[in-house]
Length: 261
Image (cartoon, rainbow, N blue to C red; front, side):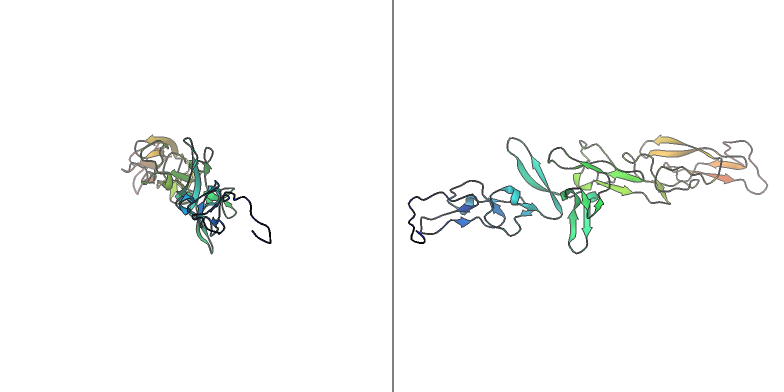
């Protein structure tokens, strides 16, 4: 008893505590990085370890897996299947944040999906508390979710959760027509590129159209050039050598779509 009051009934150790011997001592707190949601635990082994990659941040006597916080570079996922299972998952490349002073963190672990005050690039979503999927990227970015830097459906064997990111195309040397399908393409010689789908021919009056090329994606194809220019398509599949070439000394090219001066 304490303070002159005798204990008349022994009760079970509360949640987060255990007692492993019949001695005149109180119950012990489950160690840091563990938890126990029941009552009457008789051994420290009944305290459940936090999921890999998470801690209770130094606190003992915890009663729920909710007390286990994922490390800064991971984010929390709950999978079903009868009983909810909590795990800490690697942050995709496109959701990593570099915080001054605190190192690398995961924007998917924040309430508003931000790096500090800056929203993550792209549309990230998930069903309930499953893993996040990058659904789309803004204009001027290429959606990547494979190790080779391409985009595939989530069910494809090449899909990699950790590789997901929106890759920004280089402003002056690349372009992209379909942000969620294609990779950033090299800017053709005959265009002035801004890293997105903007079409700005070097030679005014030249005609360009969109054309899908197997193994490359959607490119701009040079169809014709104005008078006194010849069409030069080059040999690259990505069309990066296409341009309207001015006829040289002693040459001319009338009409449009000329191939030789």
